Structure formats: structure tokens, C-alpha cells
Amino acid sequence: MTEPQFDIVTVPMAAGARALGGRPVQQDELVCLYDAREDTRLLVLADGMGGDGAGELAARGVVRTARKLWKQGDWRHQPGALFLEAFCQAAHDELRRIGQTLKHGEPHSTVVALLMRRDRANWVHVGDSRLYRFRGRRLLGCTEDHSMAQQRVRRGEISMSQLASAPDQHQLLRGLGGPASPIVDHGCASLRPGQSFALCSDGIWEHLSPAELGRFSRQRNRPQALRKALSLALERGGKNVDNMALIVVRVSWSRWLQQIAARLGAIMSGN
Image (cartoon, rainbow, N blue to C red; front, side, top):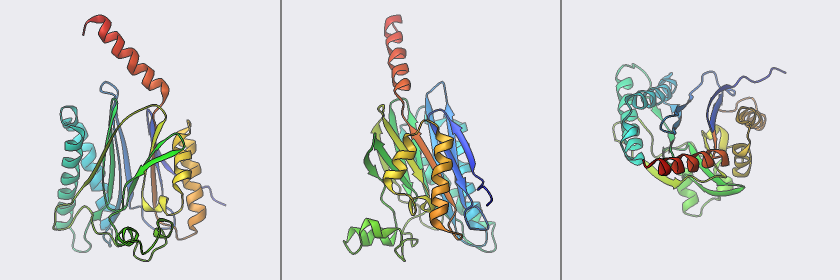
């Protein structure tokens, strides 16, 4: 049996990977960006859609926009929520621009993004790509999908455990691209040792439980954890499984102690 191929990227505290699954083209994209001087990370995951190759272009457009805004450096002086909102709107505009160049297909994409700066985390999402947040083994929260199936969960018509297999799970109510500006959901939290995050496309959360994602996100060897997670999702999904992408983040005690030492040093030096 052929060993599955994973595209893996790493930065301090975080790593991301994706797999083609049983699809002919890869429409999931991700990027992990890091600035050591500012102790800041930007983690972005996008799941494209639109037909005739437009989904692939859409996801690439989202990641390209993230890289562009990161390089411009507005995150250095903007509040995290403001920067992420501007990123989502800019990515939406980029997809509309791409759409104008296509004869067929219409580029749309989900997005989930996490900005971690020093002891603060801000995140956004549009569509059904998710962010899970953990403290140790405890699930602190998960973003809520913008889908028809999620609305049925809210109305009590189906349970959360039935959502992944619901026939209207892929019918999204929000996304990047299209004529209307996206409505972006925001979240934030203070960063503490023992916290971890998992950002993923629906190809992952359809096949891995929150408890499993929490366990993989806590592992110290993140590339190994990603290989195990994607292999398990591929096995459960079968030969026609969707593209999948996953980013895991773990806030370590060593990072927290380094921050405390740096603050004490600043106080002692009078800065």
C-alpha cells in the first residue's frame, strides 16, 4: 500500500499539513507565518469551492492575501480583530478579482484564521472550516459552521453527532467570494500554558472527533501528530474522501516562562 503524501509546514508552537484524499485536485490551502521579534503567528486555512478549477484558485487566493498582508505588517500596530477582519475582506475582494478572469466557475472559499500575538489570541472564520480550542483535555469551544445543517442543529432537528453526515452539511450560507461582502465571525482569548488549538477543513472534522483533535493538538511532536491525524482521517473516509487540511498549535510552559523572564528583565532594566 502506498504511503500517503502530506504537505507539512512548521513554525515554533504550530504546524500544518494537508492531504489530497480521494480527489483529483487539492482545494485546501494553509499557511503558518511567524515573526520571532514580535512573538506573533498568523495561521490561515482555506477550503476552496466553485467548480471548473475555481475552488483551487480561490483557496490559493486566500493564502496569497494572507502572505501579502503579513508582509505589509499592519498586524504590528492594529488590534488583532481589526487586522483579521481586514484580511477576510481583502481575501474576498481577491476572489472577486479572480472570478472576473474566469470564463467558467466562480471562486468561493471558506476561511479560518488564528492570530497569536504574545499572550493574546484572535480568530475569525467564514464557512465550515473550524477552530477548536482546548485547555488540557477539556474542549473550551468550537466555531459554529455557517451551513444549512448547522441551522438544523440550532433548531434541534438533528444532533451535533449527525451534522457531519447530514445531506445539507455542504450547503454553506456564508463564504468568501460572490457579490456580497462576507459576514465574519470573531473570537478571542488570553493565551495560557496548556492551551492548544486545532484549525481544520471539513475533510478533517467529518472523520475525527473533538477529543481526537485535542489529543493530536497536545502532542509535542507536531509533524508526527499531523501524520497520524491525517492518516486516521484518510482511513475512515475511504477512497473518495475529501481534501483535508489541519493546523495544530500548543502553548507550552517554556514559552510562558520565557515571557515572564523577559518582562522581569525589562522591569529590572527600567524599560
